[in-house]
Amino acid sequence: MFTGIIEHAGRVAGVDVGASGARLLIEAGPLVEGVRIGDSVAVNGVCLTVVASGEGRLAFDAVHETIRRSSLGSLSLGDRVNLERPLRADGRFDGHIVQGHVDATGTLESVTEEGNSRRLRFQAAPDLLRYVVEKGSITVDGISLTVAAVGESWFEVVIIPHTWEVTSLGGKGVGAVVNLEADILAKYVERLLAHR
Image (cartoon, rainbow, N blue to C red; front, side, top):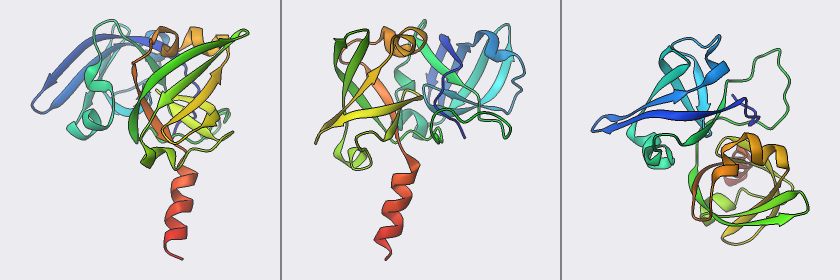
């Protein structure tokens, strides 16, 4: 389980997409310390298993299901990626419950400056948006964000300068594809109500 509080913005050092899936090599900087083979790390919100490490880099394998549901298959050398290790049992819980199981991708539609903050509007599919509520939580590329507004085909978040500077959002332009994970609580409520 993750919280959506990004620990480090790494860089893609290698991408090899083949018939069996993809191998990603990420420059992870200080995040490499204490990470072992077999550990989980969220990469742009996708929970992946470390398969190799060394020289400040972590390697991950991604299966076809992961590539199909996320934007990982479109990563290029040098792309900035958000990294987070799982929540420790004795750690602080600052964001919201994030599984690292991407529901779908969305597209950045607009970025509007509002004072020193930025309002970002993302296009998303209605089957994901049914779980999105104003002032609720959503995960965008692994970042726990508060929903500022929601429509039939879009939602908006407002981010502070710190988030813009230290995550991959600051380097994204209109049209960029992002990974989205809806709040798991909404999905459980829907499932329970369906069986009443």
